[in-house]
Image 1 (cartoon, rainbow, N blue to C red):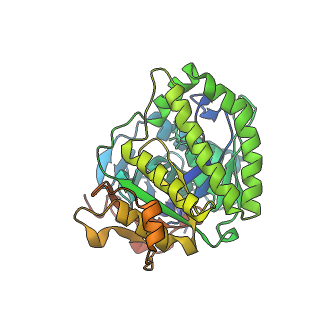
Image 2 (image 1 turned 60 degrees about the vertical axis):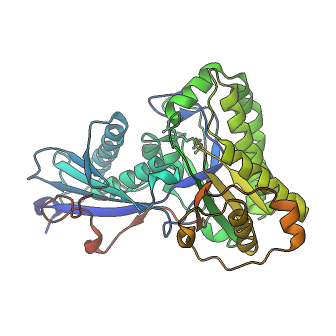
Length: 401
Ligand code: DP6
């Protein structure tokens, strides 16, 4: 049967978050979401962190509807509307140019969208990046659009364009005012560096902070350091970072990752009025990482922080157990002792007296809620199994929160 004749057409996709090692901070165009500098990120594995989105279209639907984690939400959000409009525009363009005799899904049908994260928003990992990458993937599939989609995901959230690919991903700032060259592309696949691991250290306490969108706007308006960063520092660092990744040089990769995170937070301090994303626990994690590396005489672990206090740690597989034990000794779990480590399994490590004395110099019980262990992963995936759809045959959410 032709798609348009079916009562209901439904597609489900999953998409990953990503963590930038060369940060995006600042727009030159707020509506098109065009950045003032290029950026580079690592896509995280969807076994541990993913957004799932189902989209359905039907001639029987009377309005567009959206559910976030089971709760109905406003479909009118301008960025969501921009993504929807752009995918439909690409679909129209594609259909105009082809002479397929299969009637495509009608672009005038109303749609229902349900989306869910398998990770708590408290993890502070840009859920908007995974969310918009997932939305665009699912809509593209629904309307039969293929090809370059990072440009559309970018309209949802800047960092979302990097979640359209797995592994190591660059978002090229582009030069054109219309944004057609502001795209993401893969620098290396997730298989390129099999030993690379990621530890998300979820810190305790309130999660209130200035949102990225408004924070970066104030930085663009007031920070001379941000201007210097975008014009001078990032172009050099991007090239270096790509080289470190290509050579799987953890020393170089880790150092530059920490330096770029620190410069991003320095531009926040240089913003007027200043923005503070790091808290005291973040700073203690930074100090701990430096003591750990100093003890080993090289860069064994590297931290990076986005617009919140949680640390994302990069390391290699052979260091995970030892560093995790150091974190556990420094920030002993308050209550959830057995849930302290989540994600990929971690072996046990016994720490030498020497390391303990040099590195575990203070203890802050309860300061870290849990550690999520993951690794680089692939880009958005189509979910074939219909039992995984978040919407039922009636077009309404299957499970309610
Ligand atoms: C600090 O992509 O969330 O995580 O484009 O306004 O939606 P909008 O901002 P967003 O900013 C991410 C900022 C960052 C750094 C990064 O991911 O590169």
